Length: 312
Image (cartoon, rainbow, N blue to C red; front, side, top):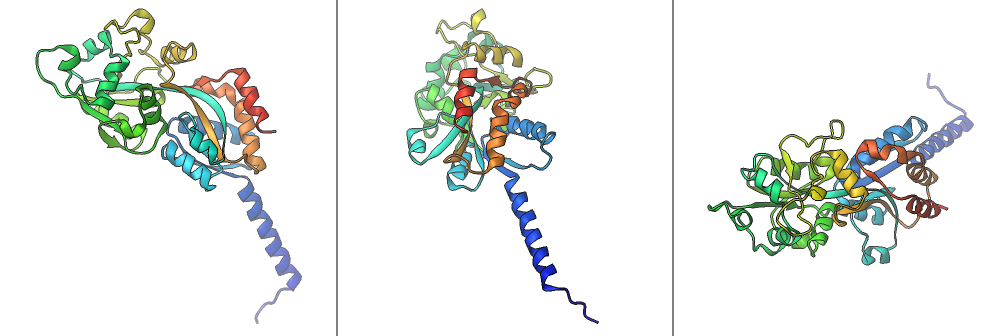
């Protein structure tokens, strides 16, 4: 015998199902974008869920360019962004809040045969520019005078990203001006330079150092920036050995900005979803206590107050 149900029960079930689906959507936050901000956003999501079990997070890294594009298209609630916001992006209606600070570092393989000389001498901004943009330095002999040709293999990012844009800005250009073999994503770029003793690249701090141990990840090293141009890394320029000292240098302005930079959440206009606004406010208040342990530098209280006011 076929069972029938009262029409009111079917309608009630449909209404309840719709309400649950709507509530679930309102409490689901979608993110895409910068590899630089990805670990921090993951950490925040984990801590936030301890107090807000109803909130769900979908977080994917794909480069700052994707984060901005997805945010402006409205396909995510928030884009993760890791370079200075341009006037063109502002003209498109982008809304943003700053969150924390990190830095982009010039990297090489720990197996580079001239590692000790490079760490003692460093490279100047102009020398990095000659390698990454001008193409006028193509051999380690050009800077180290080692008496034998040894080609430099340059690596860069193939995806539109904040790290490349920030590093290029420091060198006086844009991402499209950077030379080298294009690699997608910060982890893959770090892996590529680690495996090539002749290679040079750039990476976000979080992909250079292990935040748990504070030491550099296996296989990767940093070329110090010779900021005063005396072909020697002086004691005040020598802060690359561990995570704590590089973050201290960034916080105190001893590392140049750029390539030190602020990291952002971006959206198309101010978010309307209350769950999004609540989460952002939490990252700027209670969430700030997780920044240092996640491997980043806090922004100033004045900036925090400014960004919190943008939520009102």
